[in-house]
Length: 453
Image (cartoon, rainbow, N blue to C red; front, top):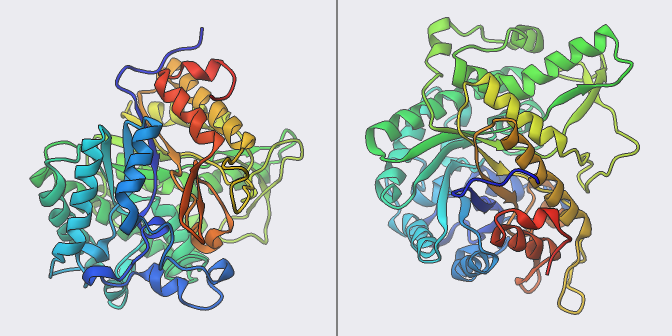
């Protein structure tokens, strides 16, 4: 019989503010870098923006009712910095903060544990005008913002995370320019990465002064694997890719050191931080959040930048609409690796999901998504495997509750367990939502049976 999930295991879904809320400038909110980016022609597929998205800002109670009906026991959401502090610092916007107070209260009435993320990529534009993640003052700015939110919500929110996926912020936003704010510079990326970690540390320290519960960091990990016939050059490329994407953030935040490969990756762009500057990035956290989607099988590629490695598509695997291989074993192995490398920290799977083709409109009131059901089944089984191997996994959040604005992909990629008709905003739970509800209701027992009711 497969191992069971812990009695107090949290079963959740995750979203982020800019991707679902809509009304980005409502009630005194300040614009974010994503508002600017999406309104720049050519940046987002189809010209989509977050002006409406899933209209969650106005339909929040309806969406919480959906969560309740699915049986969720946790909901991971992010707070839009610019709703709370329209200028990024200083003046507090009571209406913006009030939205999150109402959301939290609604979740608690539904018996759902709130998990709040302070930063999911939507930096206030006013701070970007002052250098954004390149300005060393960003860490105290972030701590001040965090303090405002902690004081308002910590009496009701037991689980907090500071920064979501710092690698994506630095790589997509500053190294390759495909995400907001759209810069392309290795020099900037190295600085932004460091300042993201400084902000995380400052946010945790602010929580220790003000908070009463638990705070952690969320990272995205993509295991880097080798082909069976790998060369020495492939192995070196794999190690560089792993350092750049996976260990660049975990090692400083949890061990107080950067991976030894960083100077080789960045070359002249590596700032050469002093030991005391790096050690200051290490602050004790209560848990670590893992966002896992896929692995990469890599080979050496001298033309690739900044790491001389390229992913090799696996011909006999299932791939998602984003081109990612379905590889659930990587989730189990990553959870165990995190447990072993970083001292047995409690772990949450804070994002895990897949974009597969779904019709733009339900068919006879239903949306069948068998590949997503398979994805959920196999990845939840991988969490069971990690638990059996000793990892302290305390919860799982599927990405995502709703089809949403999938960043630069716009609305062309659907990750939701709940289908959204973007023309009418009608919500329709997919077969994957019904399956997940069965898993939750059975405490994981439905993983051993056939898909859903």
